[in-house]
Image (cartoon, rainbow, N blue to C red; front, side, top):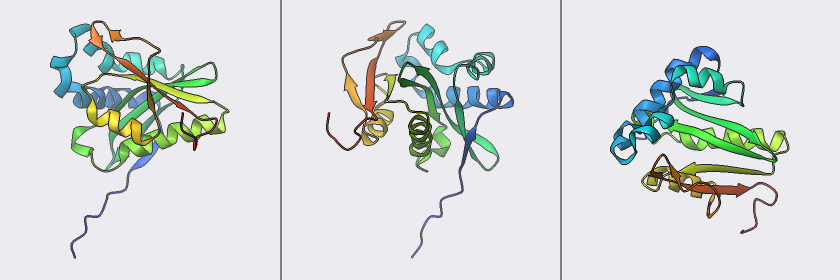
Length: 168
């Protein structure tokens, strides 16, 4: 029987020196969807290394490392009793290794340890693989929140951490 061995992926908190690698992962992850974004929305989505360095003071950023290369990232910003999840991405070459699941688990563990009661994010309707990942982690679509980013359609997804096993 020939089983594929999954390589070891390390997920750790990002540091300022990771900013260029994070920006590269964001660009590679969203480049295939660039035509679906307005130019302004795409520029905000991919973020520059300088913007990423600035975000380190706003909330934690995690990176997934495989073979000494950053292949995934996610960041959060506290907003009241909830965490806003942003800039979640996995390099297309590293997808299928459950890296997105691992990154979301880090976010949820951080939220639980720090007493946050919910999570929310905004996504575009054309990122269907990401939407399925969020739904598998218990996120549900919400009517609240922005409906576009510089003309690119958006919707919000939310997850309550108060009673995670109850349907909403």
